[in-house]
Image 1 (tube, rainbow, N blue to C red):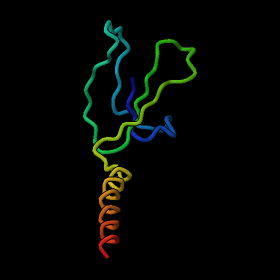
Image 2: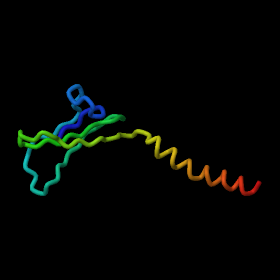
Image 3: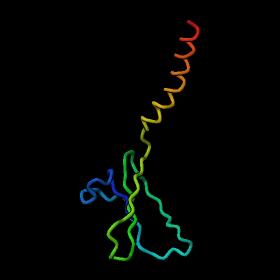
Amino acid sequence: MRVTRGNGKNAAEGEIVATSVQATHPDGVLRGEARLDEGLYTVTIESGQRNLTRHPQYLLRVHMIDYPKVVMSIAGPLIGVLLFAWLVV
């Protein structure tokens, strides 16, 4: 497992901020800790097999505001208030 700073578009230039040594995990769970600053990171899972052409990648958002979620949480009540105001007038 490797954690790099950035969104994974250019993995070659990403700064590696955390890595895990290859080992056998009997329960199938990889455990580790890393201190990450605020930002966007890519977690890449690599296998010991060298013939894999694709490595699973996961985006990790650390303490960032999710603007689409904020807009959607405001839009519902705002539409309700506007509908109520339209019905009252």
